[in-house]
Amino acid sequence: MRAAVLYGTAGAVVLSGLGAAPAEGDMTRTAADAVAVAAERAADEGIRFGKCPAAEGLPTIVRCGTVKVPLDYAQPDGRQISLTVSRIEARGKDAKGRKVARQGALVFNPGGPGASGMFFPLIGHLPDWKRIGAAYDLVGYAPRGVGRSAPLSCQDPKHLHRGPAPAPTHPSESYKKERVARAKAYARGCARRGGSALRHYHSLNNARDLDVLRAALGEPRLTFMGASYGTYFGALYASLFPSHVRRMVFDSAVNPAPEQIWYRNNLDQSAAFEGRWADFRAWVAKHHRVYGLGDTPRKVLRSYERASARLAARPAGGTVGPGQLQGAFLQAAYYDDHWPQRALALSAYLKGDPKPLIQIAGPYPEAAAEQENTKAVYTAVECNDAPWPTRWKDWDRDNTRLARTAPFETWDNVWTNLPCAYWEGPRQQPLNVRTGPGELPPTLILAAERDAAAPYDGAIELHRRLWGAVLVTERDAGNHGVAGGSNTCVNRYLEAYLLRGRLPERRAACAARPEQEPRAVRGGAAVPELRALRG
Image (cartoon, rainbow, N blue to C red):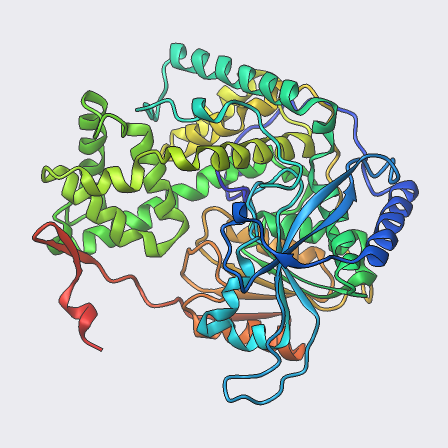
């Protein structure tokens, strides 16, 4: 899937054919020593923060620098690569001008694999983050391969968008053959462009890089917040360097069980997306008077299918076909705040106005290079992280079965990850994430019960594996990423932990955030429904 977080509830899916491969396994003494060498060097050099390069697109209040890490931790004195880092220093004062003690750096990773956290420091200006921004230097960075951090590429960005694309829920044999050929070509492109360095882009090295960054920031212990995929290599870090942890927040946790990384997590994620797709359609049906897409979830589905068939015959704007439509509506399964916009665009399109749909689903050529880089890093990390089935018949069998009950996202997920079947490099064996009593300070796990991109069972599994962790659940909610959003209950737990080190007992719960209000169309423009204006 496009998001790095992969996982859910497809327990009945039959899995086999996972190919054996070379691996590092648990962190060897040599690797641990190499990280220590790199961290000591980084601590001595520090990070020289200054004006951010124009390429980062950041305002002047953000300062940027770089930290060097070994490309290969087996050779800590060999080739070094530079990771870009951003920071806004702690303000040191609260909203009333009173002094606030600095608590060090809070490092954030937004997930992916392939996402950059360079914009993170700006979050300190949002109301729900101001108290945290008063106490902490807010630090973002681009992991290895991302942006200007020794960037990866697998194809010419101009070939990323192929124009209107189909999105068959039950693909034909000829279409499957075409996608297999494309997956093989993409894997070859990654091997050709990445060369011998490609094998070093994986989650274990992301965790090791994080410790070098900690040292470069001058922090004896790390305060870290990871979202989505960021929770996975954050969990690796907690297992590898438990004594280096101060506080850690895992927001929308990935299932870290070794057998889940990554093929099974993808299958489970596809199953979970079907539930969120149903949630979205139920919400649209509830607001039939606004959108006119049907007063039952089934009728809303028929409206969506009618739009897909129409786009197959005549792509909107010459660029938006069924594949682009599906991509736009997959995002609705991630974030509730996309629901009004998606419903509005579908409604407008079926009423003869394609512009809103083209706006949300059409390609953005100016972003092609960034998108290609994100895709390359995602593919490299996931393919390198673990063994994958190497026979197409295993993928075909497992996903054909799954698509009978979860058709919406299953095949799209296959095509995204299929290059891993034909990956040319060695694979890691996933680390068995686990900490025992007293090894790790208490940590905080945040999760939404109906999150499709990081289904809830993943948070339960992480909670089970990290001794002393506390799980806070947003009940009957499915937003992907719950920290610092519109749920004040969740935010209270987050603040209490980051600012005072306070945690509830092993579990706590919050009611769901307020439901999204619909938006109607009047005179060609989106406006809030009247009740959204009342208080």
